[in-house]
Length: 128
Image (cartoon, rainbow, N blue to C red; front, side, top):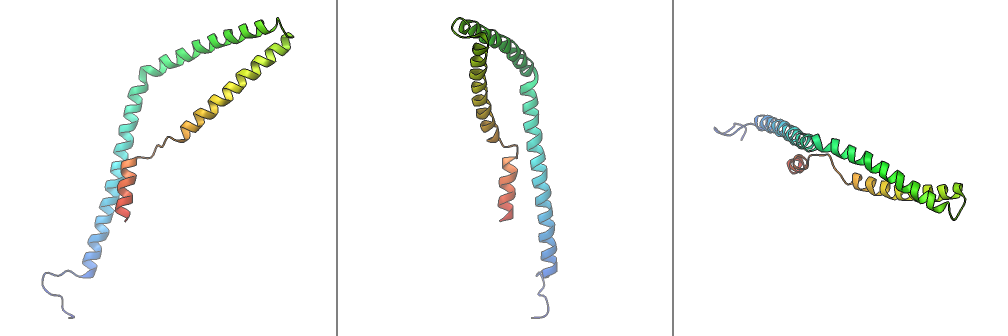
């Protein structure tokens, strides 16, 4: 049993091939992750090009309009309460709405993952 039968490989040879294959798998997983990230970044850049400028302009005009609406509410409240109290009530109400919107946005943002899902799944399968 000490002599190797012709056609059989030694343990060292098999181990060498396994290590080489693992190296190729890891390099392939890294290439896959790079390609996925590059594709996602290209799609995001393309989608945000002109749209971002319009969104920023819309937000700026919207903020101005909101400011005037809040000023209108303050002026209306001044007929019933002191001017400082009217401004305080409107500021507190607007601040409460802002806090709720920020909390909701942060919750949604935490749900976003920037990790490439296909590469993670493939590497998990290869690790088994």
